[in-house]
Length: 179
Image (tube, rainbow, N blue to C red):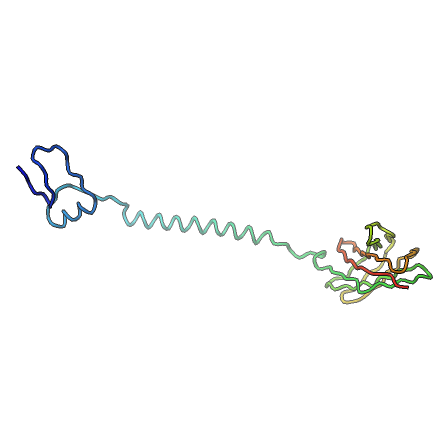
């Protein structure tokens, strides 16, 4: 004997139960035939809203922590960051062996010079180091000069002049000696 159940053929002697998918169960329930009891369980709207609020608060706390850590790591202004110098020019007097270095303070605080280095550009060897630079303070926007004596430089040689302040700010200048 054959029976027709919602468009499917079943044999009376068959013990194989019919499995329904979600959509089939819904179609059957809509038609008014309740072939199987299919219940979908979910979370209530109150619990879903509470979870969304909790996730939003957690993400905002993490974002705030990350941003505040980034902002607090920004360097603060210090005198060494405001201290800036450049070397405008260098002149060499071969008869006296004196090298005059003109240093400009382009920062916004007074600069105290500490050392002047004269370096051979071809091999990187320090020719002369003048650490006796004392009491040379250059106000902001002004130019000061430093003399390095006791040099014997050949015409056509290239030198590197490096000036260092007491706070460690440096400026370098490359010059070629002319006769």
